[in-house]
Image (cartoon, rainbow, N blue to C red; front, side, top):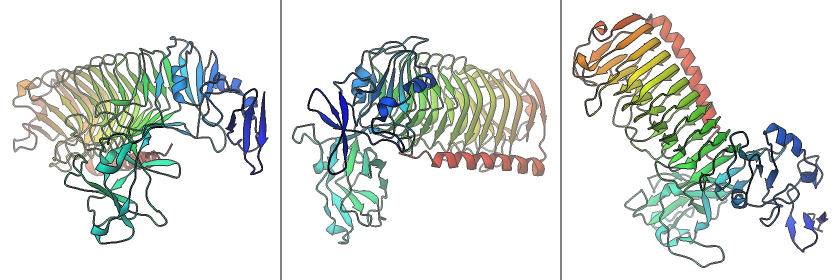
Length: 568
């Protein structure tokens, strides 16, 4: 039996009989009865999400893990839901508008036509937000702040000796040993939200709400104190630590799983590991990863589909894969990744894919990633890149290299690619030691470096063998390197074989030689087996492409601004 108990203070509670347990009830949405969960139209939810089997509910307000998991008797935690013995076709709905400080570890498998599903429940009204899975560990916190008298004696500057005061507090236990920390693993918890700290290396000139590490090693390895300038009305900041190394993962080979409508933020994953580690034949649908130390998603399995995923402001990569077979991405977005400043020549940027077979990336957008927007690195075979837009990436918009073969690129736009801090490249397209590339319809404009670079790698392997290009526009590039639109970074013409470029519009400023050297420009007819291009009319066409591309940049950056950490 269940009824609603209203106490004198006006609070309402759900009372279950038999038993003496009294648990807080989730406030009802506007114009809904207090027992609205029992009358909620679950049949509609099932139909909208393609649920074929049973449905369960995770509700941290009313739930308990000893419950049956039904809508009338929900579970309380993701841990209980992940460990449940689900059957093919079952679905677990996860209450939206909440932050879950625990990972979703999935133990059950579905079938090809009956996947197990974990679905973020968007309740109308004040709960119409994605449920957020956070790697912040609230058992680890910072205490013992004091006024920083040695920093001018200002009353709004405080400090804490992190190496001595950052402890792990296990549930029901006493203080344990100190934990390893870095500045980018700390978050400020306030107003029910967790945000990464804003750092200023100049400890003597902090603005309100800024932090600094006062010590010899700013990375945190040997630092002594965390210093903060308080905001008006703040007594001391509540600092927590990002401690979990994964936020969503297949356990024991769990396959045929759908994760839909969830946000994942703040994860202490390694630099080439993902906060989401999907199993075989998983589908990620309309999910978000943000504020993670490594990659947002890293795929190493077969048959994974990622649809409508947004991966922003992660420490290393947005989306990455190694050894994946038949991985398919559709309508995804990466932006602002590589916040930790990894070398974009190594492993950083929007998305890097290695050792894949049958990779498909379609209707994909990247903006302001500090590294290549899309990067097919080592031994990729049979890839299809369809409708790719990369704006303001670093080093390369699209990079195909290191034995990437049999790749089809259709409809590429790469603009405003930036050189990295070492002043390297900034090209719209890089083809390096790759072969049998077919490219149809590409627009490469206003990049810092050349529009296109064909090059050998450090082992002097052949490059660009079998490049078949059609409908390519490359113009207004090399804005920081003398206006070169095409560069062959090779030592001799024999490095260039089976090259074809037709029905294209390119300002034919071509160089053969090392990037940035003084070699004379070459007659491109000496390098292509077939060449059919037209010169652009600079004044007319530059204005046209500038207006169109700038419009895209404004749209993308506006969208990125709305996807900052915590903005789900």
